[in-house]
View 1 (cartoon, rainbow, N blue to C red):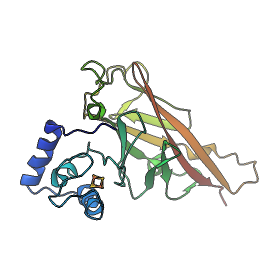
View 2 (view 1 turned 60 degrees about the horizontal axis):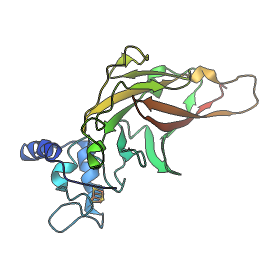
View 3 (view 1 turned 180 degrees about the vertical axis):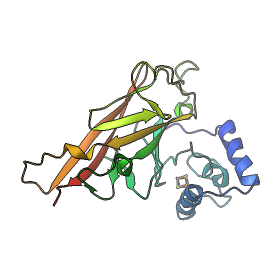
Length: 221
Ligand code: SF4
């Protein structure tokens, strides 16, 4: 990975650092950095060279070694996914894929809100010098997934047509909201738990990015 410092993003972090703005997620990230061998004596990251006091405060930043618990980069594609609800699910890279896994099973027919996950999709193409000024933008983004989920992008229904204007410049993010339909359990089966593993695709003009959401639904008693 070709890492470089991006002044605009770091300035955003300095503004928060000067105002002494703390967030739970920023503090969690800093705790990981504090025990990371890549943290230098002057408080920068040895891989991306960024000052960690600022980098950890910018939500659209990602750890170049994917050590932070809230955000992971999709391998080889210069985008990242940031999970808002780290108490409800985990986000990890397994077999070169990003996997979001709910921590607990849901009850059959539970409220849709219970299954809600908000995931920021972040354009990190500025990490790679090979993208031209035109290609660095992700244009006309929409979601593709099976009918087990209802979803929105930036709080709007995600249909192909009305999302066709979502565009992300380098360092920008959009929020994907996913809700799983727990009533899909086949009640005639003799299984106690319906385990699901679903691929979510984010499609742009020129690329398809994907990640998996896995979880379980308990059979009603
Ligand atoms: S950003 Fe990642 S690699 Fe760099 S010091 Fe922090 S945890 Fe380590």
